[in-house]
Length: 506
Image (tube, rainbow, N blue to C red; front, side, top):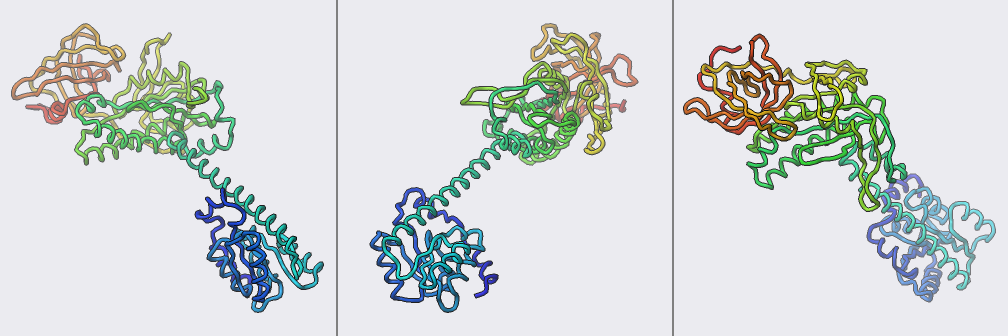
C-alpha cells in the first residue's frame, strides 16, 4: 500500500482520546491495549498466550499490515507487536507509515521477525521501532521488552496530557486576564511569570477615568435584576473598546471604569491611545443607548477624564489576592478631571495634550482649580484625533429655546459630592434637550455642579430637581449662563424637549 495514500487517513486519528485519560493516569500496565500483527495464525496465538500469561487482556490481532493500519485508525493502542514478512503490506511499510504520522509516531512497535537478526534489527530501529526480537521469541525477553515499552509509552502520554492540561489552564487564565486587559497584555503577562510577582515600579502612563451621568437616579427606578442587566450591557461595550486600544482595566466600580495606558506593556503613544479610546467609548454609547431604548430604558451619557504623568504601577495585594494597579497623585487627578466633565465629553490635561503627536480637535479650553491642587489646571475638551486613529465626535452645540415666561429657580452649588448650604435664586430663561440658560446674580464658575429646584407650575412645567454643570456664558446674551444637564427626572426630560409656549430661538 502506498504511504502517501495512508497518511491522510492516519492524520485523522486522535493522538490522545479523552476516554483513555482516566486509564492513562491510574490503570495498571496490563490494561494496555496491544495489537499483535502477524500473517501466521500460529504465531499470533503464541504471542497472545504469552501476553495472557503476563495478565495482558486487551489484545487485538491483525493478519497483515493493511489490516493493522485500518485498526489503529479506529482504536488507540499502547503497543504493537509486528512481523516483518507479510503479504499485501510488510512490516517495514507499516513502520514507515506510522512514523510519518505525527499523532501515531510515538506508538511503540516491537518487531518480531525470523529474518536476519542483526541486519533487520538495525533497519527496524532506524525506521522507528522501539525494539527487536528474533523468532522464535524468548518469553522472558518478551516480558521485559513489552513491559518496558508500555511503561515508556504511558510516561510519554502522561507528559502529553500534562501539556494539554497546562495549555487549558493557560487559556483559562488568559481569558480571565482578557476580561480586563487587551489580548496582547494578557499574553505578555503569561509569558513572563515574574510579571505576576508582587511589586511595582515608577512609570509614565496615561490614566482614563469614565463615569455615567444620571446612573444613581436610574438605579432608583430599576429593579436589581434590571440594574445588573443594564450594567452588563454597558460594560460589555466599554471593555471591548478598551481592549481594542490596549488599555488595562485597573478598576470597575459600579458604572465607573479606571483604565491604564502604557502599563504593564510600555507604549510610546499611550496618551494618544487613551484619547482615541475615550473618543471611541463615547461613540460606542450611541449603540448602548439604542439597545437601552429597545428595552424601554432611558438613555444615559458618560463623562471621561484623561491625565498623563508618572505613577507607581505593579501588582499589589497579598499572595491570596493580587491585582495590577496604578497609584499616585496623577491617578487621583484623572478622577478630578472626570468630575468636571459633562455627558458625552472627553476632557484631557495639558500633560496629555503635550504628549500626543497626532492632530487633535480641541473644542474648548478651561482653567479649573481642583481640590488639593496647588495651582490651576488647564483642561481641553477633545472632539477628535487624527492619524492613525481618525476619530471624531459630533458637535455638541445646541440652540436654546427661550421661554415666553422665565421660571424662578432655587439652586445650590455642589462641592465635590456634597451640596452647599446656601440656596441661591435665579431664573430659567431658555432650554434645549440637554442644556439650559439661567440668570442669577451669583457669578457661576465654569464646570461647577449645580442642583436646581424648579417649582411646578400648572400648565407649563412638571417641576422637580435638575442636576447640571456650568458650561459658561451664553454667546451673544448678556448676563445669561449656559448649563448642561447631568440628571433629569423622566418628566422633566420630556418637558425640556418641548417646553410650553416657546418663543423665537436664540
